[in-house]
Structures are given as C-alpha cells and as structure tokens.
Length: 326
Image (cartoon, rainbow, N blue to C red; front, top):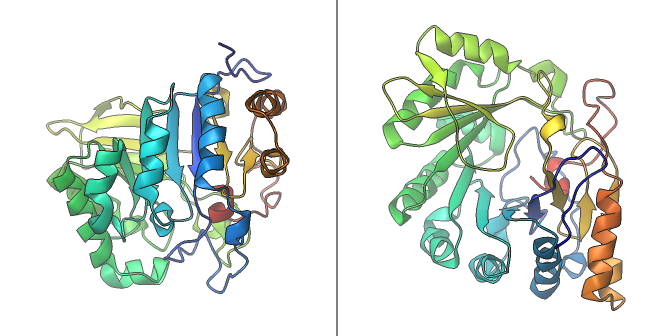
C-alpha cells in the first residue's frame, strides 16, 4: 500500500472532511454576520462522491477522519453518511466537530453510525455572552452536550477560542465546568482567517499566559490524549481532566502536521494557512477512475507546504474558516 508522505517526511494520516460550509450560528471569528456567499448545493460533493474520495484516502494510508463544517449537522442525513464512511477499509477513527445545537436530536444515531469522539465548540458559559459571540442559544448547546454524554461518547472535547476582552475571564469557569461533567477541554488561539469584522490581532491571547494563570489555581501535570490533532495536554492533578493547548501562533505545530482538509465542494486544502489546493470535483464529474483520484491526491501531497505564515503574513488567507473546513 502506498502511503502519503509529504516533501518534509510527514505521514498524512488524517483528513478533516467538511460536509457543508453552512452553519446555524455566526461565531464572530468565523463568519461575518451578513455573509451569504455559500456554495450552492449542486456544487457540494454528493455522498457517493465523498465516499469515493475518502475510500481513496483510506487506500493511501489515511486512518483518521473528522466530519466538520460549517456545522456538519446542518447537512441532511449525516448519520447515514457517517455510517458509510465508518465502514470504509482503513478508516478506523471517525470523529465529529460540532456546535452541538442539533446534537440532542442526533447523538444516538451518530453513535450507532460509528462516530466515536465528539468535539464541541463552546466559547462561553454565559448565555448573554454566548449569544453575542455566536448569535445562538447556549441552552441548545448544553442540551446537545448532555445528550452526547448520555449516548456514551467519550471523550467529549470542549473547544474554547480564548479572546482578549471577550471571554478570557472565563477560562477557570470552563475548567470547573469540564471537571464537573467529565469533559476534556482545549483552549485555542485565534487565527487570522479571512476578514470577519473581528480583529484576530486585537483579541489574540497567547495561551502561555492562560497556562500560567491556571497554574496559580491548579496543579498541572503532563498528560496525553488519543487523537490526531495538535493539542499539547496537561492533566489537572486530583482529577481526570485533560486540558489541551492549541497554539498555531505562539508555538506552531507545523513540523508534526499530519492532515489535510477536504471542503464541501471537493477542494483539498493542503495547509490551513496557505492557498495550496487540489480541486477534485472536476475530476470526479469528468469520469475519473479510482486510480486517477489516488494519483491526483499523491501529486497534491507532494506540494504540501512546510508551514503556515500566520505570523509573517497575517492577511494572506482570505478564506473564512467555515469555507475551508473546521
């Protein structure tokens, strides 16, 4: 079996699959409030096309697949698609990133489909502040989280984008919340992705300062978590809580990058912070064979850049996060 190895010797074993660029929230760092420029449904990869592409990745050594968006549960029949993907040879880890607003209705079906792990975006535990950040209702997210917990998902990871002057006063509250409910917590630095009307530089928080703040309150010891992502973990002594720090700006993790993103329109983005890409939809709809798809993927991985340039060229990427895939 051929394995995907990029020019810098990094094995590519992880695909983040965006099943839609649409979302039922409008997080201030992700999409402008009035944005309407979404892909048309006829330009989305069909379930059969998605299955072909992910099967090709599986034959090339990819073992981890994460369903993302936008908000993946906006796409109809997602549990059925998840079941098809979970059954593909080679794919042995299927996970989901969600805002959890619809999770209370779908948690059981997703578990039955073969999704094993869930990440939930949650930037505030205060209903008024949550609405200000996302234009959504906190109660829906909390209901979804409890449904996922009841369905047996483990681990459930909470992703909190820490923003200066917005929610950075809630980091300890979020730690306490995750200890109470046996969730894993990951803090994330803001990234300059597109122009949403919210300045990433204005609200940027170096997570090393957050870690130092937590060390004043908790005894943090080295910890690990299964998964294919870039978080560096510690554990809160006396508890089972793992806290991960995702630091694309202050401590970039490009040297261990093991992933690519596949957008809803069939574009493979080789780096979150670069424009290198491969458009697969034209190939698929022109009658490409499975071998053609594999060769196109191999050629694309051979062009994967070494690292992002968020710090050097913060205005370089004009894609919104929802369009790239989470």
